[in-house]
Image (cartoon, rainbow, N blue to C red; front, side, top):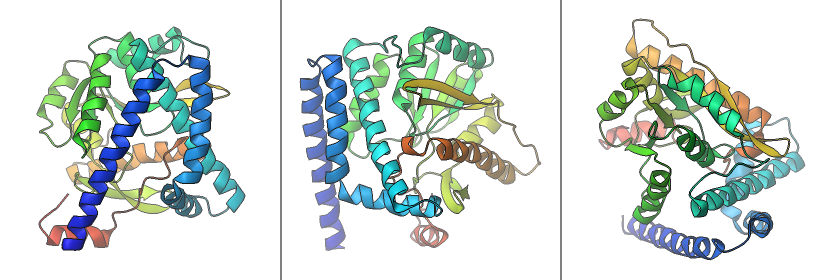
Length: 316
């Protein structure tokens, strides 16, 4: 027990240090011209790739399980691409933060792209299921900028409060309303029924969030059921939408509305819907594997670890 407490304190101290250093760097980078900022992002990606050995180890393990047919060199190329994508995304977020808007530029979605998306999802409101893929924050901020007051996000509250506060401030800057998944979902359901849009990023293993096991790259993955619960409770159409780096620019990709199951068994409907959007996500990741965060421990929760949690009265 003492060893576990010490590890938690060390992890918290590490997160605090990373946050303070990152935030200090962000403040300094606000004064760096955009062309130089992109070059610094590329350099930072290379540094992170070589320094973050634990994350690289998780990535190699996940990539080997997901793509056993690929060579080690191909796995390493995907891993390097992930770091480049994250750095590219961070640069775009930094530029949006310091300007207070997502700029119009050849490497970002055009006004016509945002208008087309807005027309698709605002008529009846929508649940937008996205992922930590491509430029997820730019997707939210860009849409909110072109549809003021019409976007909310169902977010996981970060364990490190200062980082959570910064993320919430960034979203609020663009008019994004934040709902947390550790609060009752009734407010989010009402928001949807008022024909608004609610974005969700349910692609990570959150063991204290209600979920179900569905296939993901050939393995059972503990997957949040929030999107399914909201879709079934509200009757609002749901879409899978991503902002992806394609041919040298970020472009919007959408699929939906997704079919809403009606078997008469609520638990089965939740499982089917969760499996549906997870299948869409897997298909997109297979096409753009270097844009998803493979360093996340996506298959951490197993039926065995879940049984242990339930035995300790910590049921997700």
